[in-house]
Amino acid sequence: MSRHGEPHEHGKHGASGELGETSRYVFSYEPLGEPEPEPGTGPADTTERDRRDAEVGAFLNHVAELGFEAGPKGLELRSVDVAARTCAFRQEREVDPRPPVRAPGEEPGGAVLLGSPSWAHLAHLVGELPFLFSFREYGPEGGPELCGVDAPTREWADVLVEHRGEQWRVRVALEGRERPVEFPGMEIGELFGEGDFRRFLLPGTTDVLDAGV
Image 1 (cartoon, rainbow, N blue to C red):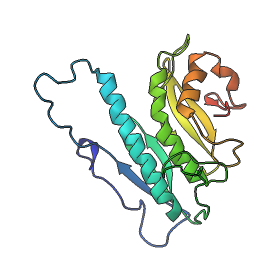
Image 2 (cartoon, rainbow, N blue to C red; image 1 turned 90 degrees about the vertical axis):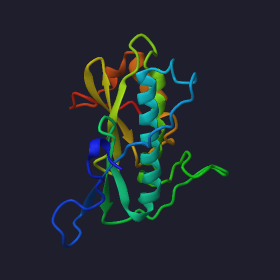
Image 3 (spheres, one colour; image 1 turned 135 degrees about the horizontal axis):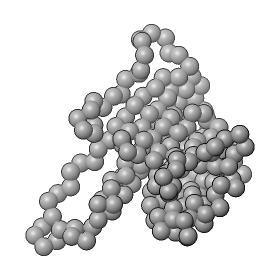
Image 4 (cartoon, rainbow, N blue to C red; image 1 turned 135 degrees about the vertical axis):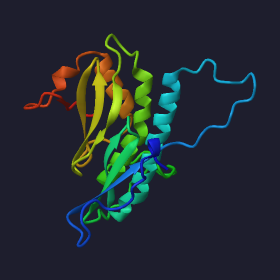
């Protein structure tokens, strides 16, 4: 399916022929229509923001599932655009052979532990980001709005947010982590809500925050 009638593209961008260093795949997503509510049971108290949050949450969970399914094949998540409901994957030349490491009894798609490949940490990160919506009113400054994810390398990804009219990138390490990616939505929400996030500005940048998320 596609959003606003745009084609749902699964092909490789660029000319056909030998596979280059990476191949880029772009996907769009739109949830199926919900059934009509029964008379007297409509979502009268549901705000437009609540509906949007539910839609974005479903989209991000779907992207995370795709990330876990495609990662072992070398097809790794590259970016997520929340407003457009699109995501892009790249085909890596070398597949990371490591399987995701999980706690005993952990369900597939759940938290991944240290020693997992970067694509698994990234997929889990994306699936956890909807919790950020709960922090809009947190602290004196309020939490940010989620805009997307940019993962140009296996080493790290940036969570893209907007806070009080300013665009920020929150850096999340994917390789060489000292702890699992656990509650990134909460950590990012608290980071901005408490108001002292600028002290984590990465040297040499104007919008990248490295707070150890």
